[in-house]
Image 1 (cartoon, rainbow, N blue to C red):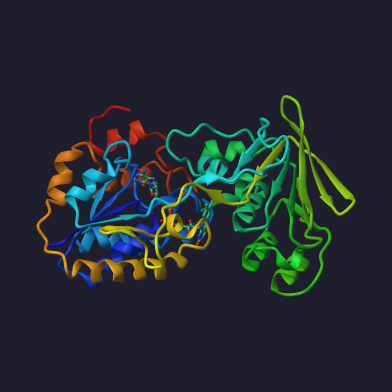
Image 2 (image 1 turned 45 degrees about the vertical axis):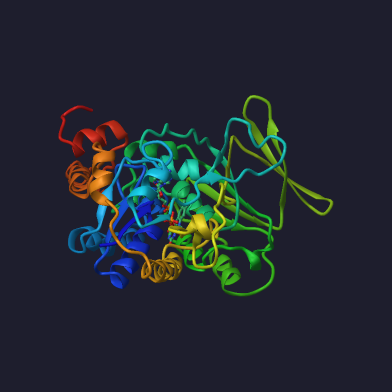
Length: 394
Ligand SMILES: Cc1cc2nc3c(=O)[nH]c(=O)nc-3n(C[C@H](O)[C@H](O)[C@H](O)COP(=O)(O)OP(=O)(O)OC[C@H]3O[C@@H](n4cnc5c(N)ncnc54)[C@H](O)[C@@H]3O)c2cc1C
């Protein structure tokens, strides 16, 4: 039996396991993740009020519950185990560890207190384990014109009553309760903004935020969606959102904390007073040199954001995962099985969190759910491990 390890149980890792299980029904597949819980950014990136997007988890559950795929959580590649050790145990190792470091603005002042990356903020709003709350003030500038920026606008602009059916925690809700004004600034003209028009139209349902769109130009679906928002002004508005297009960040002003963000467009300047700047301009990190089918070296592969860069939605990782799985199946056709695989890794990481342990965490989160929410995520690794291993400690 061939033994395959996939490092990273986010969507790319899970899609790869799915494709491999289909192509190589006789193989034994293990998903290994640094966190005690599976599903990567589905759990800790996708917005807490977009539970429909998180529903893809249900198809991944089948991997563990029906297809014999193993889960080894709380096992960090490079700390708990080395790549060499895993390569010794498995016929193929697939790296699906994503990219999570916020790209910096690269202008003076981008390291001032009050300047926060979207990854850090969305992790805090999603109760990523052991994450300190972020301090969001009253006047927020969001730099970026993609869907992560749209998520941030919506989460910051919603009132407490608008999170019904979400898994936003009380701690996370408190972090955005002071917001009064949000300026969203993009470098491109409005017709080239990267927002999904559906997400822009969704802002037209905000119950407490008045919306103003400045500098609209061109045509197309995104411009139409933005036009539809202009003038949205609910009776009880407590917040304002302003969209600006075609402005390039020049400097973040402030001494002890950010006080304003300055942008330029030719000779013109836009100065936005603020106490918080959120950058939603993408992610970075070291990426291995993989070919189009994900091969890095014999027996070693990459997939997902780690392979392609930090772009694309959850479904966009599927085709890539299928390609990589096809390459692995072809490569292993010439390799005789015989490695220790799961039995070896079980001995190597005795404290790992397995799928049935994760189900205990999942059940505890659903059981302790506040009124109107779908779960209350456990915010610390220690507590997750205590529940997973039923040690009673926290
Ligand atoms: C804030 C945000 C919101 C998003 N919202 C949406 C949305 O609404 N809809 C949508 O379709 N797409 C959304 N996306 C995009 C989507 O999340 C990505 O396409 C997808 O998650 C990429 O999958 P991945 O498996 O490559 O990476 P990830 O989801 O990041 O998974 C990587 C996994 O690897 C693990 N890992 C990392 N390092 C190690 C290590 N050293 N050892 C072991 N494990 C490790 C991580 O814990 C994680 O579980 C969003 C992205 C972000 C950042």
